[in-house]
Image 1 (cartoon, rainbow, N blue to C red):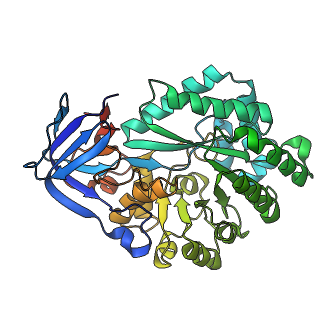
Image 2: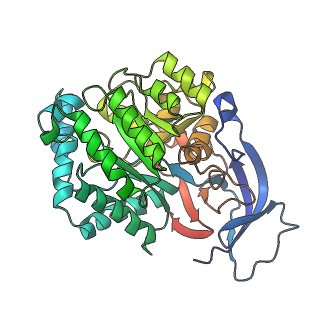
Image 3: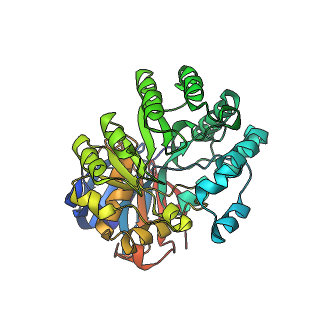
Length: 412
């Protein structure tokens, strides 16, 4: 992909910087009307009034008159590699069953583990490709993808190989960041022996380092509690993995505090995080990745976004697309929920889905803002007013998605 593109007459709206934006500064966006953006070989080369725009041979040209240009959206938490589907469990929850009670009766993650073990690599690639295409249409240019529906060496390796294949597929139009989440659930054969399963996962780590940037753990009561989570993540860090946590999703366990202790890149979910956890995460610069679609689907309270922001923490937003608790990768609905129910401003929400999402993947120096030197990942809205994003509740107002300087998706 040559990645040579010139966009003229755009209204650029972007956060600025090479690292996460914290606290109230999340609401500060740079807005530049009538701008020309030149991208050469996938990198932003020029941003200005057009008078000094360099010549780029063979460049494509887009007239963005009347359109807002935003950085490409970064979906920094998904589980989009899986076998099977679980619509029956969704119906059970509507009738009152809880997420944990479904897990205890053999459903939940274990159900998807069984289906994923039975699926071939080709089947998993085909299914994931469909989701990636839909994400591109909604403006996503970088997505994090986790393993975790294997819980044994062979299936976890299969999932990580599928992610690696997707990165290389010519059909894949967005960037993918890989995470090893072997500690997603305790398999039935290790019931009551969680510590032994963690020992096994630690043994797996060297085999998976070439496939995954991050190691993650479902740090939750009756799953992987604090000491087992700490032991796994410390071992992962020694192997060169960067760290993430599913933290304080179901109960207040201390996952937020653990993420700060280990200086993790991000802690995610955080519906029931303690005030002390928020304070420590802010002090240590841990990105709080909040997942409003999951709270919506589970009928749970939303994560306390305003508390994080008031404490000076960096907040990111992601979809948590998965086959169980949140079968949705909707960026438009994520934006609406963040603004309506989590009381985030649209400016904070844009920062959370761009530069802070990039920071949650340790990529803020590469993507997440429209700045010279960064990758040419840009979203064009079908409007000159970015405030339409939550106003179009659950509707896609992205007109074009540009990844690495190439137009990869367009909508009427």
